[in-house]
Length: 102
Image 1 (cartoon, rainbow, N blue to C red):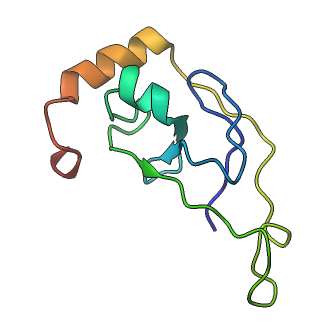
Image 2: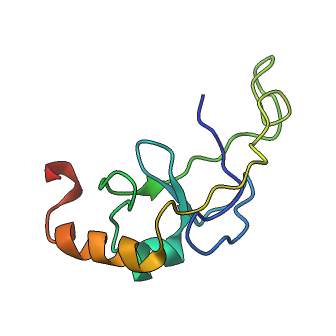
Protein backbone atom coordinates (compact mmCIF):
# COMPACT_ATOMS: atom_id res chain seq x y z
CA UNK A 1 0.00 0.00 0.00
CA UNK A 2 1.37 3.40 -0.98
CA UNK A 3 2.28 5.54 2.01
CA UNK A 4 0.90 9.03 1.55
CA UNK A 5 3.51 11.12 3.34
CA UNK A 6 2.26 14.45 4.68
CA UNK A 7 5.10 16.75 3.61
CA UNK A 8 7.84 17.61 1.15
CA UNK A 9 11.08 16.08 2.40
CA UNK A 10 12.99 19.13 1.16
CA UNK A 11 11.02 22.26 2.11
CA UNK A 12 8.55 20.67 4.58
CA UNK A 13 5.54 22.00 2.63
CA UNK A 14 2.30 20.30 3.63
CA UNK A 15 1.17 17.77 1.03
CA UNK A 16 -2.30 16.57 2.02
CA UNK A 17 -3.66 13.38 0.43
CA UNK A 18 -5.49 15.34 -2.28
CA UNK A 19 -2.44 17.43 -3.24
CA UNK A 20 -1.84 17.72 -6.96
CA UNK A 21 1.72 18.96 -6.46
CA UNK A 22 3.00 15.90 -4.54
CA UNK A 23 5.64 13.93 -6.43
CA UNK A 24 7.08 10.51 -5.52
CA UNK A 25 9.90 8.23 -6.63
CA UNK A 26 9.59 4.45 -6.77
CA UNK A 27 10.59 4.26 -3.09
CA UNK A 28 7.79 6.68 -2.14
CA UNK A 29 10.17 9.52 -1.28
CA UNK A 30 7.87 12.53 -1.40
CA UNK A 31 8.60 16.05 -2.57
CA UNK A 32 6.60 18.99 -3.87
CA UNK A 33 6.70 19.77 -7.58
CA UNK A 34 8.55 23.04 -6.89
CA UNK A 35 11.45 21.28 -5.15
CA UNK A 36 11.53 18.52 -7.78
CA UNK A 37 11.87 21.15 -10.52
CA UNK A 38 14.02 23.81 -8.88
CA UNK A 39 16.20 22.02 -6.33
CA UNK A 40 16.33 18.35 -7.31
CA UNK A 41 16.25 18.54 -11.14
CA UNK A 42 13.95 15.47 -11.18
CA UNK A 43 16.57 13.38 -9.34
CA UNK A 44 15.56 11.75 -6.06
CA UNK A 45 18.33 12.63 -3.59
CA UNK A 46 17.80 9.32 -1.79
CA UNK A 47 17.83 6.80 -4.66
CA UNK A 48 18.73 8.68 -7.84
CA UNK A 49 15.48 7.84 -9.61
CA UNK A 50 13.01 10.22 -11.19
CA UNK A 51 9.63 11.41 -9.98
CA UNK A 52 5.99 10.97 -10.96
CA UNK A 53 2.86 12.68 -9.63
CA UNK A 54 1.63 10.97 -6.49
CA UNK A 55 -1.77 9.30 -7.01
CA UNK A 56 -4.78 10.64 -5.12
CA UNK A 57 -6.45 8.12 -2.82
CA UNK A 58 -10.25 8.39 -3.06
CA UNK A 59 -11.97 9.97 -0.06
CA UNK A 60 -15.17 8.02 -0.60
CA UNK A 61 -15.26 4.22 -0.62
CA UNK A 62 -16.73 3.41 -4.01
CA UNK A 63 -15.77 -0.18 -3.29
CA UNK A 64 -16.19 -1.60 0.20
CA UNK A 65 -13.24 -0.79 2.44
CA UNK A 66 -11.19 1.07 -0.16
CA UNK A 67 -10.76 4.76 0.58
CA UNK A 68 -8.78 7.32 2.51
CA UNK A 69 -11.07 6.64 5.48
CA UNK A 70 -10.04 2.97 5.48
CA UNK A 71 -6.36 3.45 4.56
CA UNK A 72 -5.47 6.89 5.98
CA UNK A 73 -2.48 8.97 4.97
CA UNK A 74 0.59 8.91 7.16
CA UNK A 75 1.08 11.66 9.72
CA UNK A 76 4.82 10.99 10.11
CA UNK A 77 6.81 13.83 8.60
CA UNK A 78 9.97 12.85 6.70
CA UNK A 79 12.95 15.10 5.94
CA UNK A 80 16.08 14.87 3.81
CA UNK A 81 18.70 12.63 5.39
CA UNK A 82 21.43 14.84 4.00
CA UNK A 83 21.23 18.58 3.38
CA UNK A 84 19.82 20.52 0.44
CA UNK A 85 23.31 21.28 -0.88
CA UNK A 86 24.12 17.56 -0.90
CA UNK A 87 20.86 16.93 -2.78
CA UNK A 88 21.74 19.60 -5.37
CA UNK A 89 25.23 18.18 -5.88
CA UNK A 90 23.87 14.64 -6.21
CA UNK A 91 21.26 15.79 -8.75
CA UNK A 92 23.86 17.73 -10.76
CA UNK A 93 25.96 14.59 -11.14
CA UNK A 94 23.17 12.57 -12.76
CA UNK A 95 20.64 15.05 -14.13
CA UNK A 96 21.80 14.52 -17.73
CA UNK A 97 21.03 10.81 -17.49
CA UNK A 98 17.35 10.06 -18.22
CA UNK A 99 15.56 8.48 -15.22
CA UNK A 100 15.05 5.19 -17.07
CA UNK A 101 18.82 4.89 -17.59
CA UNK A 102 20.03 5.79 -14.07
